[in-house]
Image (tube, rainbow, N blue to C red; front, side, top):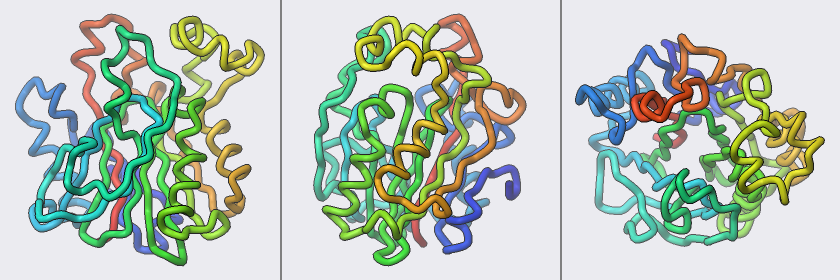
Length: 274
């Protein structure tokens, strides 16, 4: 941790700008901004990482728990940009079939972008998360990088392994040359997939009962990236659990009522190149 920011040792070693904010910076979600502080909070976080978000571009993909993956580059726009499928920053997009969330969970998952890949300098990919895993990639040879929003639905939809494939197809990035960082997210210390509504409603036909009873998101994702061809020594896993580290992270899972969930903030995970 550097100045209340969770960073990857491996990515930092190769001078890749990366980090996950903690509660000390406050809420980072504009849609959950109850006291008009989110933009200032974001600015302080960016400044601490050395990002001039006025002369660079920080892309915030439209997260919808989809399996869609986009290749992005700089356009003429600077500052914080909400990235949609029609944004000029999108060079290519691969719309993948995924496991749709329950209808009362999130609307229009097909419109989402839940993984972004880039080769551009002065461009940063950022995601406002609570318990889902931010999965970061960096290719040591080509310099391309990616950020994936991997919750349980995304994980079982294959968004992480498909992002690796897109990095190879679009950027000539080879899996043995990739660094992977799985950031702070919920763990089995707090979360039992078998007892969750997601398993009962949409995952019981996809995930076997014994797997659901012993499911840990970080373990699942790390095994998946190893199967995709990444070297074990190139994979770094954050030790933090967002649901049990109440003093450090916001958590949608940790609060029970709908009213409390609406008020629960978000932290940011970000990767990019100066």
